Length: 410
Image (cartoon, rainbow, N blue to C red; front, side, top):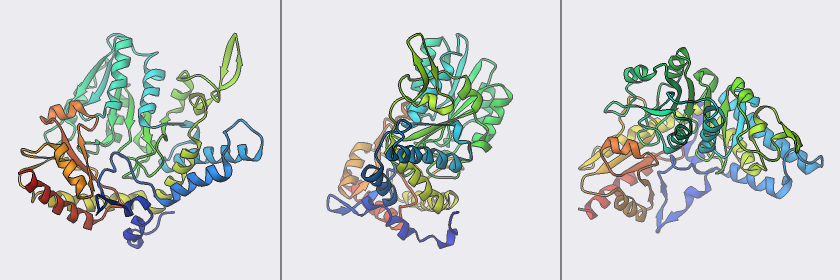
């Protein structure tokens, strides 16, 4: 049960994050890089620490107390994630994150099915993790990639996307939210249109799950990939949700322990459900931490988190208008708290380096989205990405630092 929005003391929430108290180059840290990785509340750090101190054992392999406790904690995290996203536990494959999840779909679902003449539809805004696996599969199957383009404000060109959903398209792979533009795509509507045409949908939820309520069942997609480290959880954690019929029909992606029922030299009987995709010893402590992160986010309430971040985004966007020569990329009507920008005559790496000396952490570069930046006509951008633990005071301090750095760079 989440608390009432008016009752949330955001200063107290911020105090839950130990790293945010540190200084960088003698200045208070302003962490504006949550699209890269989220910071961890103390409860997540404690849960991971507690597992190693008091419960450490492997999962599903021992009848002793520690083994039972480890298995219960690991499977408990699966159950928490399932409730968080409104799906069944036996449809949730635990893995290292979105990149692994998309590769799992590419190699286990697409590789055995696609053939020459088939098309894989992606959008211009995709992260490399939702481009490169499909290129590799296309090379091996004879299928080809098809790209849906964007409008000048960074929103999808929906009529063009619908027109691109031709009978040869077998897969639509789409970001729920862009990591560069912040654009939030109308995923439920797109999945409905794809389903009418018999197109399988994979949604990259990396940048959506940490910032807004996500009801995967309501989206009506075929696959949904999430990563734990962006949603206050440990690195090396994530999940792939898949429709049960796909889980049953897909062959294992990796072979080894844990994903089997019986092994003989003349053949192996694989485990059922999500477990057949979970070969080897998983990141048990990481998933215990992710379970704690899900509890934490649920207590705050994702709708409250989204509202908080939208208020911060509005403040930041308005404040940036006062910087001479600054251009914001991505102005879609609905966007997450991600602002990519460039300043005339200034390289983004120089900007980010000097901002770091002021204690401000922003990302600079191509953000694993080279095709998108080529379309934007820029080599690199700076990206300030906010989370609910940021403050309006930090935004004001960031703007002061930006003015200072702007003068230094001429």
